[in-house]
Length: 293
Image: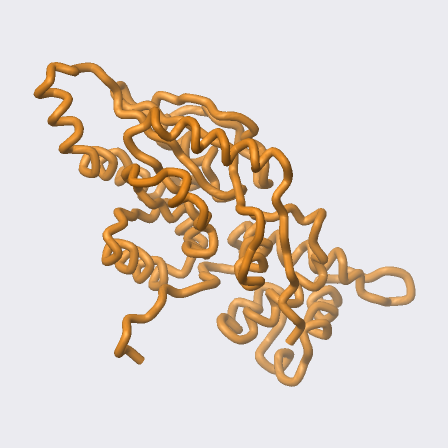
Protein backbone atom coordinates (compact mmCIF):
# COMPACT_ATOMS: atom_id res chain seq x y z
CA UNK A 1 0.00 0.00 0.00
CA UNK A 2 1.28 3.47 -0.88
CA UNK A 3 2.70 5.46 2.02
CA UNK A 4 0.47 7.97 3.81
CA UNK A 5 1.44 11.43 2.52
CA UNK A 6 2.54 14.10 5.01
CA UNK A 7 0.08 16.92 4.28
CA UNK A 8 0.22 20.38 5.88
CA UNK A 9 -1.75 23.52 4.95
CA UNK A 10 -2.07 26.64 7.11
CA UNK A 11 -2.16 29.81 4.98
CA UNK A 12 -1.83 33.22 6.60
CA UNK A 13 -5.54 34.07 6.60
CA UNK A 14 -6.17 31.15 8.95
CA UNK A 15 -3.94 32.73 11.60
CA UNK A 16 -6.15 35.83 11.29
CA UNK A 17 -9.27 33.69 11.75
CA UNK A 18 -7.80 32.09 14.86
CA UNK A 19 -7.33 35.56 16.39
CA UNK A 20 -10.85 36.56 15.27
CA UNK A 21 -12.46 33.59 17.03
CA UNK A 22 -10.53 34.18 20.23
CA UNK A 23 -11.47 37.86 20.23
CA UNK A 24 -15.17 37.47 19.35
CA UNK A 25 -16.11 34.37 21.36
CA UNK A 26 -16.80 36.51 24.43
CA UNK A 27 -19.76 38.05 22.56
CA UNK A 28 -21.65 34.75 22.12
CA UNK A 29 -23.64 32.35 24.31
CA UNK A 30 -22.85 29.23 22.32
CA UNK A 31 -20.24 27.90 19.90
CA UNK A 32 -21.67 25.77 17.07
CA UNK A 33 -18.93 23.46 15.84
CA UNK A 34 -19.59 22.06 12.37
CA UNK A 35 -17.79 18.87 11.35
CA UNK A 36 -17.86 16.45 8.43
CA UNK A 37 -19.92 13.36 9.34
CA UNK A 38 -17.58 11.18 7.26
CA UNK A 39 -14.63 12.16 9.49
CA UNK A 40 -16.21 13.53 12.68
CA UNK A 41 -13.07 13.48 14.79
CA UNK A 42 -10.47 14.38 12.16
CA UNK A 43 -12.55 17.41 11.14
CA UNK A 44 -12.54 18.83 14.69
CA UNK A 45 -9.91 21.49 15.21
CA UNK A 46 -7.91 20.36 18.29
CA UNK A 47 -7.05 24.01 19.12
CA UNK A 48 -10.71 24.97 19.52
CA UNK A 49 -10.91 24.00 23.19
CA UNK A 50 -8.16 26.49 23.95
CA UNK A 51 -9.82 29.25 21.90
CA UNK A 52 -13.35 29.00 23.30
CA UNK A 53 -12.58 27.88 26.86
CA UNK A 54 -15.65 26.90 28.88
CA UNK A 55 -18.13 28.37 26.37
CA UNK A 56 -21.06 26.00 25.74
CA UNK A 57 -20.92 24.07 22.52
CA UNK A 58 -23.14 22.19 20.07
CA UNK A 59 -21.47 19.72 17.75
CA UNK A 60 -23.01 19.24 14.31
CA UNK A 61 -22.11 16.34 12.03
CA UNK A 62 -22.89 17.75 8.58
CA UNK A 63 -22.99 15.88 5.25
CA UNK A 64 -24.63 12.96 7.04
CA UNK A 65 -26.31 11.82 3.81
CA UNK A 66 -22.81 11.01 2.46
CA UNK A 67 -21.72 9.17 5.64
CA UNK A 68 -22.31 5.58 6.77
CA UNK A 69 -25.53 5.87 8.83
CA UNK A 70 -24.52 3.16 11.29
CA UNK A 71 -21.21 4.87 12.03
CA UNK A 72 -22.90 8.27 12.32
CA UNK A 73 -25.26 6.86 14.95
CA UNK A 74 -22.28 5.45 16.84
CA UNK A 75 -20.50 8.82 16.69
CA UNK A 76 -23.55 10.61 18.09
CA UNK A 77 -23.71 8.15 20.98
CA UNK A 78 -19.99 8.53 21.57
CA UNK A 79 -20.13 12.34 21.80
CA UNK A 80 -23.22 12.35 23.98
CA UNK A 81 -21.51 9.91 26.34
CA UNK A 82 -18.67 12.45 26.54
CA UNK A 83 -21.22 15.09 27.58
CA UNK A 84 -21.06 16.86 24.20
CA UNK A 85 -24.48 17.71 22.68
CA UNK A 86 -24.42 16.52 19.06
CA UNK A 87 -26.80 16.22 16.12
CA UNK A 88 -26.42 14.95 12.54
CA UNK A 89 -27.69 17.01 9.60
CA UNK A 90 -27.34 17.27 5.86
CA UNK A 91 -27.39 20.93 4.88
CA UNK A 92 -27.70 20.26 1.15
CA UNK A 93 -30.92 18.26 1.49
CA UNK A 94 -32.11 19.94 4.70
CA UNK A 95 -32.32 16.63 6.56
CA UNK A 96 -32.04 17.06 10.32
CA UNK A 97 -31.95 20.88 10.19
CA UNK A 98 -35.18 21.04 12.24
CA UNK A 99 -33.22 19.62 15.21
CA UNK A 100 -30.91 22.64 15.34
CA UNK A 101 -32.86 25.43 17.03
CA UNK A 102 -34.52 23.11 19.58
CA UNK A 103 -31.05 21.79 20.51
CA UNK A 104 -29.75 25.34 20.90
CA UNK A 105 -32.68 26.35 23.11
CA UNK A 106 -32.26 23.23 25.27
CA UNK A 107 -28.54 23.88 25.83
CA UNK A 108 -29.19 27.52 26.75
CA UNK A 109 -32.50 27.06 28.61
CA UNK A 110 -31.08 28.04 32.02
CA UNK A 111 -29.37 31.16 30.62
CA UNK A 112 -32.59 32.23 28.88
CA UNK A 113 -34.59 31.73 32.10
CA UNK A 114 -32.12 33.82 34.11
CA UNK A 115 -32.31 36.65 31.57
CA UNK A 116 -36.09 36.61 31.62
CA UNK A 117 -36.07 36.67 35.42
CA UNK A 118 -33.90 39.80 35.27
CA UNK A 119 -36.26 41.43 32.77
CA UNK A 120 -33.81 41.10 29.88
CA UNK A 121 -36.61 40.32 27.43
CA UNK A 122 -35.81 40.63 23.73
CA UNK A 123 -32.09 40.00 24.00
CA UNK A 124 -31.26 37.52 21.22
CA UNK A 125 -29.32 34.30 21.65
CA UNK A 126 -25.95 34.84 20.01
CA UNK A 127 -23.95 32.00 18.54
CA UNK A 128 -20.69 31.61 16.66
CA UNK A 129 -20.32 28.91 14.02
CA UNK A 130 -16.83 27.48 13.56
CA UNK A 131 -15.35 24.69 11.50
CA UNK A 132 -12.57 23.65 9.18
CA UNK A 133 -12.75 24.56 5.47
CA UNK A 134 -15.31 22.83 3.26
CA UNK A 135 -17.50 21.30 5.98
CA UNK A 136 -20.53 23.11 4.58
CA UNK A 137 -20.90 26.07 6.93
CA UNK A 138 -22.40 28.33 4.27
CA UNK A 139 -24.91 25.69 3.16
CA UNK A 140 -25.85 25.07 6.79
CA UNK A 141 -26.37 28.78 7.49
CA UNK A 142 -28.49 29.18 4.36
CA UNK A 143 -30.69 26.32 5.55
CA UNK A 144 -31.21 27.60 9.08
CA UNK A 145 -31.68 31.19 7.89
CA UNK A 146 -34.06 29.94 5.17
CA UNK A 147 -32.53 32.17 2.52
CA UNK A 148 -29.26 32.69 0.70
CA UNK A 149 -27.31 34.74 3.21
CA UNK A 150 -23.91 33.07 2.79
CA UNK A 151 -21.94 32.32 -0.35
CA UNK A 152 -21.75 28.61 -1.15
CA UNK A 153 -18.99 26.92 -3.12
CA UNK A 154 -17.60 23.40 -2.97
CA UNK A 155 -14.05 24.48 -2.23
CA UNK A 156 -12.22 25.53 0.92
CA UNK A 157 -11.70 29.16 1.85
CA UNK A 158 -14.82 30.90 0.48
CA UNK A 159 -15.87 32.75 3.66
CA UNK A 160 -13.17 35.33 4.30
CA UNK A 161 -14.51 37.40 7.23
CA UNK A 162 -17.04 37.20 10.05
CA UNK A 163 -20.68 38.14 9.43
CA UNK A 164 -23.80 38.17 11.65
CA UNK A 165 -26.91 36.42 10.35
CA UNK A 166 -30.39 36.31 11.93
CA UNK A 167 -31.55 32.67 11.88
CA UNK A 168 -34.70 33.32 13.96
CA UNK A 169 -36.34 36.40 15.47
CA UNK A 170 -34.40 35.87 18.69
CA UNK A 171 -31.31 34.02 17.42
CA UNK A 172 -28.25 35.57 15.75
CA UNK A 173 -25.39 33.55 14.29
CA UNK A 174 -21.87 34.80 13.61
CA UNK A 175 -20.24 33.08 10.67
CA UNK A 176 -16.44 32.70 10.64
CA UNK A 177 -14.04 31.51 7.93
CA UNK A 178 -12.89 27.89 7.91
CA UNK A 179 -9.71 27.33 9.86
CA UNK A 180 -7.32 24.41 10.24
CA UNK A 181 -4.42 24.14 12.66
CA UNK A 182 -0.71 24.68 11.94
CA UNK A 183 0.44 21.05 12.02
CA UNK A 184 -1.33 17.71 11.60
CA UNK A 185 0.51 15.55 14.13
CA UNK A 186 -1.03 12.37 12.67
CA UNK A 187 -0.48 12.03 8.89
CA UNK A 188 -3.71 9.99 8.66
CA UNK A 189 -5.68 13.04 9.82
CA UNK A 190 -4.15 15.20 7.09
CA UNK A 191 -4.94 12.51 4.54
CA UNK A 192 -8.61 12.29 5.58
CA UNK A 193 -8.91 16.07 5.40
CA UNK A 194 -7.43 15.93 1.90
CA UNK A 195 -9.84 13.16 0.85
CA UNK A 196 -12.84 15.28 1.83
CA UNK A 197 -11.58 18.51 0.26
CA UNK A 198 -10.67 20.46 3.41
CA UNK A 199 -7.16 20.95 2.04
CA UNK A 200 -6.62 22.63 -1.33
CA UNK A 201 -5.84 20.17 -4.13
CA UNK A 202 -3.23 22.56 -5.51
CA UNK A 203 -0.80 21.57 -2.75
CA UNK A 204 -1.49 17.83 -3.05
CA UNK A 205 -0.25 14.91 -5.12
CA UNK A 206 -3.75 14.02 -6.32
CA UNK A 207 -2.61 10.79 -7.96
CA UNK A 208 -1.14 9.52 -4.68
CA UNK A 209 -4.24 10.67 -2.84
CA UNK A 210 -6.56 8.86 -5.26
CA UNK A 211 -4.42 5.73 -5.00
CA UNK A 212 -4.67 5.85 -1.21
CA UNK A 213 -8.46 6.29 -1.43
CA UNK A 214 -8.79 3.34 -3.81
CA UNK A 215 -6.71 1.20 -1.46
CA UNK A 216 -8.87 2.18 1.50
CA UNK A 217 -12.10 1.52 -0.42
CA UNK A 218 -10.76 -1.87 -1.51
CA UNK A 219 -10.34 -2.83 2.16
CA UNK A 220 -13.42 -1.20 3.73
CA UNK A 221 -16.12 -0.76 1.04
CA UNK A 222 -15.11 -2.92 -1.95
CA UNK A 223 -18.66 -3.09 -3.34
CA UNK A 224 -18.70 0.68 -3.84
CA UNK A 225 -15.84 0.41 -6.35
CA UNK A 226 -18.45 -0.76 -8.86
CA UNK A 227 -18.99 2.98 -9.40
CA UNK A 228 -15.58 2.98 -11.13
CA UNK A 229 -16.44 -0.14 -13.14
CA UNK A 230 -14.28 -2.38 -10.96
CA UNK A 231 -15.55 -5.85 -10.04
CA UNK A 232 -14.25 -8.14 -7.24
CA UNK A 233 -11.92 -9.99 -9.63
CA UNK A 234 -10.26 -6.69 -10.60
CA UNK A 235 -9.23 -6.09 -7.02
CA UNK A 236 -7.33 -9.34 -6.55
CA UNK A 237 -3.56 -8.90 -6.50
CA UNK A 238 -3.54 -5.39 -7.95
CA UNK A 239 -1.52 -2.58 -6.41
CA UNK A 240 -3.09 0.84 -5.94
CA UNK A 241 -1.42 2.38 -8.99
CA UNK A 242 -2.70 -0.50 -11.12
CA UNK A 243 -6.21 0.13 -9.81
CA UNK A 244 -5.90 3.82 -10.69
CA UNK A 245 -4.83 2.93 -14.23
CA UNK A 246 -7.65 0.40 -14.57
CA UNK A 247 -10.25 2.96 -13.43
CA UNK A 248 -8.93 5.42 -16.01
CA UNK A 249 -9.00 2.79 -18.74
CA UNK A 250 -12.53 1.65 -17.88
CA UNK A 251 -13.71 5.29 -17.91
CA UNK A 252 -12.06 5.90 -21.29
CA UNK A 253 -9.47 8.40 -20.01
CA UNK A 254 -6.82 7.64 -22.60
CA UNK A 255 -4.14 9.81 -24.16
CA UNK A 256 -1.98 9.31 -27.25
CA UNK A 257 -0.48 5.86 -27.51
CA UNK A 258 -3.30 4.31 -25.53
CA UNK A 259 -1.83 5.31 -22.18
CA UNK A 260 -4.12 6.22 -19.30
CA UNK A 261 -4.38 9.84 -18.16
CA UNK A 262 -3.92 8.96 -14.50
CA UNK A 263 -4.02 12.59 -13.35
CA UNK A 264 -7.47 13.03 -14.89
CA UNK A 265 -8.60 9.69 -13.45
CA UNK A 266 -7.36 10.70 -9.99
CA UNK A 267 -9.21 14.02 -10.10
CA UNK A 268 -12.40 12.23 -11.16
CA UNK A 269 -12.12 9.68 -8.32
CA UNK A 270 -11.71 12.41 -5.70
CA UNK A 271 -14.50 14.55 -7.19
CA UNK A 272 -16.96 11.66 -7.23
CA UNK A 273 -16.09 10.64 -3.67
CA UNK A 274 -16.46 14.22 -2.40
CA UNK A 275 -19.73 14.60 -4.27
CA UNK A 276 -21.20 11.55 -2.54
CA UNK A 277 -21.53 9.62 -5.80
CA UNK A 278 -19.92 6.45 -4.42
CA UNK A 279 -22.59 5.97 -1.78
CA UNK A 280 -22.67 6.44 1.97
CA UNK A 281 -19.32 5.76 3.60
CA UNK A 282 -17.32 7.03 6.56
CA UNK A 283 -13.55 7.15 6.89
CA UNK A 284 -13.34 6.66 10.66
CA UNK A 285 -15.19 5.01 13.53
CA UNK A 286 -15.46 6.17 17.14
CA UNK A 287 -13.09 4.64 19.71
CA UNK A 288 -14.38 1.42 21.22
CA UNK A 289 -15.13 1.26 24.91
CA UNK A 290 -12.62 -0.59 27.05
CA UNK A 291 -13.51 -4.24 27.35
CA UNK A 292 -15.32 -4.41 23.98
CA UNK A 293 -14.09 -6.45 21.04
